[in-house]
Amino acid sequence: MKAEPHISIRVYAVVFSVLIAFTLLTTGVAFIDLGGDLNTIAAITIAVCKALLVILYFMHVRYSDRLTWVFVGAGFFWLMILFTLTMSDALTRNWLVGPGSQ
Amino acid sequence: MSKVETVRSHQFDDTAQQHDASWTGMWVFLATEVMFFGGMFMGYILYRSDYSAAFASASNHLDVLLGSINTAVLICSSFTMALAVYSAQAGKRRALVSFLLLTMLLGVVFLGIKFSEYYFKFEEHLVPGSSFVYEERFARPAEIFFSFYFVMTGMHALHMIIGIGLLTYLVIKSLRGRFSLSYHTPVELIGLYWHFVDIVWIFLFPLLYLVGRHL
Image (cartoon, rainbow over all chains, first blue to last red):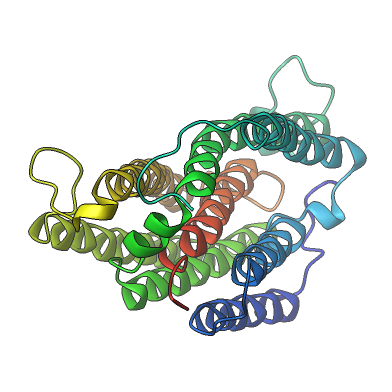
């Protein structure tokens, strides 16, 4: 994993272009009513794709050793523990009902 | 080789090991940053699931044009940061300094747009507190939305300001010729930090600006 310029400027430029295209796409799609929760799902999916591109290429993780992958994965894994355990509790109760809720 | 020796701390066998330790340490720090922002995202998810209609309504009061321009500005800055790291790895000092300065400039543009948005929100009485004004039926949950908006974008902006400070440090160090083909670890690590802050915004933008546009 020793730092060598393993990624060419061309790869960076392609990743950059895709990131800009995704930004236009996510903004455009937000104005179209896809129905149900599809707008939220589309927005999150595009954001995850953008984040993955930044992590894998701009942050060189694709070319890094296993130990780096472990820490990247740990961050994600504990975030998912936070989200799923909290929401599994919150969504299976009936509290916090007030104006503006659905 | 003597120059390489001077930047190696005595506890490491060689500079490669030193670099690996720094690189891994930075990722440990970023994992803690994920948890730091994760708490705020958790709060946002919870309240949005409870007050989805009010969040959609409040989201439409944000300026989607300024928000998307800022997203593009930040992606450009990540690109120039990646090119700065590339230049450092290739040992090109002048290119390194140029790309670092360009990254800082884009960071300042982002903060300028961000703070002008804050100014508009103060004028529109959308800042939580005693002067908050909103249509009756969504008033309280909309205030919650704007609390999340200001805290999350505010913490993000604070990270940007710290990032610009770190880039200033890199510019000074590289102008003094402290980085070379064999030693440029700080450039890589601060690059990681900058990209991380970009990723936080990649999620903040759709979650704050794009919630209710289709309604």
